[in-house]
Image 1 (cartoon, chains in turn blue, red):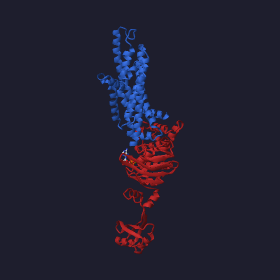
Image 2 (cartoon, protein in one colour):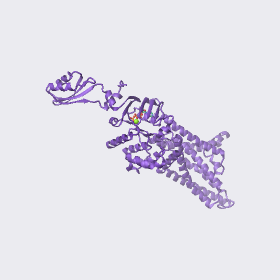
Image 3 (cartoon, helix red, strand yellow):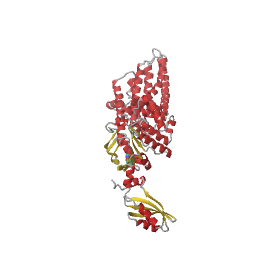
Image 4 (cartoon, helix red, strand yellow):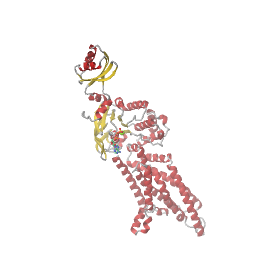
Length: 256
Length: 315
Ligand SMILES: Nc1ncnc2c1ncn2[C@@H]1O[C@H](COP(=O)(O)OP(=O)(O)OP(=O)(O)O)[C@@H](O)[C@H]1O
Ligand SMILES: [Mg+2]
């Protein structure tokens, strides 16, 4: 446990010592703000038409029409920012030779992988923390339900963890961080668009494609529903990616 | 302290280390000598648990590196060929991080880091970023990193590579100091380093051990015959050569150099036979001037070349 935290802390310090943390947090704050303002205008117009005014009794539901789409839009931000977070985790250690320090220290491969995952997760949580400000604004001037907001954040954390664990695995495959970043982006994109063609296919294929899509599982979370089905999907996705990463580090040892 | 048995490591079709066996006693400093690509780094990587062997086994400080890697690694300090530094960390932060993952107790970490920084002479760059250090300082921070948890066994891959002469002497001194209570394996290309710091030498070539011995024994072992250097002042060098060759026990005389009337000769004689007196009288009897007479020793360089070129006949 202490070993894992040591690695996680080292990773975090690394993010903040380089521009990555600032780029990732800044970029996501700007994009989130942009989505927020646009959705807010849109919501405001709809609310006017409904005749209730902002936060009025007859108004359009702020959770359904503003917060849920906002959360779904976050997946776009993750598509661009999370590859930056994971691309160097293993690649850079391999390139610079510091992997020799980690692998000859009394640490297990799992502790190293979990430490790196945790470091990325904390940075991602910091990224999400910035968006809490926007939410606070909604709570101050309106009266949204808090439950979908909390489950929405839970869903975002889980979805982000999927991306992070997958990115970690891809980074463990190459010593070139740019290559790692690009492949990670491409793979994220694939998981993001995989169900776009589902409307043209048969019901079985549609179900499969929807199930595979990382973002599809977020919908229920943004509506305040925590379905075991989605939890199982996210948790097993994360566990499997981390498992693959441990295997990849181990097989790298054999190949040298 | 270190026991290596029939170690073999293959990278796909290339065999980097081929059936290597040796042992190192507690407190001993073992030199690992070999040309580029001999398999020194590969052997060290297996010993430190960085990569598993293809065949054979290694026991370090009582623990098999494949069966109980964590226990073995607790007792090993390793300086890889490239010091494993994080460029964005300061030297102190880096050493604190390493002491943490090596299992130094939290309470003694700061004091231990300071002590090691003093000892490896990096205290003056404690707040500098590792990425901005000169090669010599990187190497020393690498050494500091290896000794932090006071390991029983130190494995150093070319610890003096890239250092200036003063730093080389300091580093050798440091290695000797650590040698007292640690077992050390160090690899090097520099031969004098071996005779100065190591108790024993393993010479390795193309993945195979070609010799294991003390530096002195190696010198003696390779010297098949005695060679003398004789410098004589005489009118005709050819006469001197004939006269020297006539001495009983001498097998061969060659002219090494001439400077006017003075000439130097290399005289080979049968092994174990001291012909110095006979050589001296042979010169003096003729009335020539005997300027110099001394035994020529084969240097470590020559031994090394001798052992690592085709003549593996001594094995
Ligand atoms: N990761 C690797 N993959 C494939 N072959 C390798 C790898 N590492 C080393 N080798 C090969 O194994 C052999 C031994 O290499 P090694 O690095 O152990 O030599 P060395 O004695 O340390 O050499 P040097 O004095 O140059 O450091 C070489 O032929 C090298 O090309
Ligand atoms: Mg080497």
